[in-house]
Length: 534
Image (cartoon, rainbow, N blue to C red; front, side, top):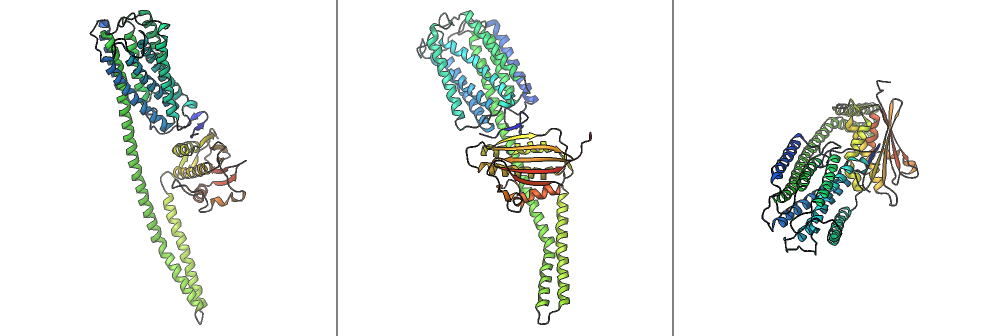
């Protein structure tokens, strides 16, 4: 099971890195409005001439369906990739819908009269092709509505990662497509007739199915509009607008191979190609953002490395002199004491000088530490709950990789803690990182979980980070904070000794205890700022 972050029924938000959670900007919204307006203009221009008979273009349906098939498969691939990265059930359902819609194009093309043979392939009846097209027209907005429902419900937004989830989704789409095709072929005798002959339609059946398609499309649009629009939501709305317009255009048609018939399919192609181009463009834009962020992070790390090098050089220079004096005075004292005629007075003088040099070394270290402590943000008022959720979101990929779930039980109305947000986040990151490693290394058979809770005490905030891993020995509760005793962090953070140092510098306390029946709990108590209301 992959990491799922729970906080009072919500999923902890992450940075906007996907097309499904990046808000649509004004530029995209304006472009979407222009495209829908173009669709409407096409409808108004076509309606008066919708039933004008045109010549039968044999290659029209195979070409149009081939274009839509390739486009929808590419859209599904993009959505499956996003669903895999973000473990999104909603994207998985939407991608499955696109695969199903694409697969229906195959029997639709093969069974269309005149596309390959006069009667069509697959042993299809007169209305088989029309029922496949109708199913496709109704199914797409239903899948969009399911996506909108799942993406809007925090309890259903994420799904546990399973290696075969995409395979299962594709298999389901194939099964649905095969089932739909078989029903359309075998049910030609008992399904309501769509066509009188290969060209003329039955108006009653066309009106009823078109009204159903319009109703489903309106439901899909309403579901998308229930929440702030993401980039993906916006282009799905544009596609549904095209779907709605083509269903309206389909209502008064009386036959195939009319101006309205050709316009209907061209509008269908345009709606899907717009979604395809938009998704590719947005994916490229997000990739560019990620590349820039990665470059900026690399520069920041290089700057930090150079800063550390500079600090190390300063410490070496400033502390080197008093330590050299310590070595010299100690050697002199030993020489006075081990001489054939020991000179105790000179030895005492050398030892006093040694003591002064040692004290000077301590003073230098304190001054350097004080200088480094004067970093921007030291005097911040830190919201511990916000810090915890940000840190968990930052470690989400590691949680997912270790298949560890995180449960947040954060108290409401906590007072803020004065101190350095950066240093406190390092503490949180390291403690949670130790918990992840402990749980990941534990034997199988139980659910891997890390629980983080916060409570308000008198003039203090109590934070507890618990895991159900192997746990620590009963006598090691304090020794884990000694230098080099913490778990390895693979470069992720700092060891537990420095965690204790940072917490104590903030006037707080940190302890570890063995969980019941297993696991480890870290208790962090930090003095807080009394609320003004109090």
